[in-house]
Length: 126
Image (cartoon, rainbow, N blue to C red; front, side, top):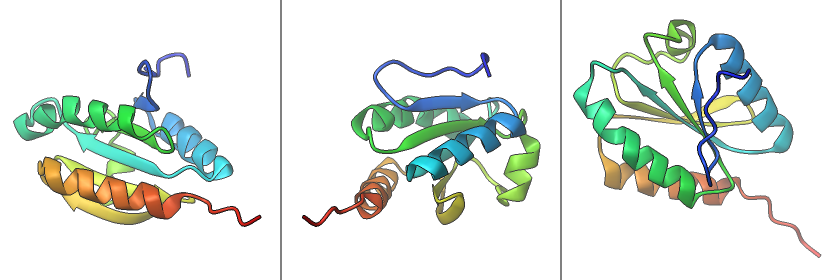
């Protein structure tokens, strides 16, 4: 797994294989950590435009794992999750897709990430 890029000050990882996808999803599931996955493609200008926005989001939400998945590098995962257009953002909890957003809409993505992370927080009652 040494190929993964873990970005400074955030939980943002570039996934480069189905095996690494499975590893990170399994780890997050075991830790009760929600995942926000950005399915992108180098040839898709709106996807590339969203990369820096996604990195900024990841640094704002320490309670979630943010994964960047290039659909041309990790076709199996994109197909399994029925990603048909880029950019696609998929929200996963306990290894299951809970929500999907297609398109480069920063305001809507931020709103959905905020709601998703808030709803995923475990509330401890004393």
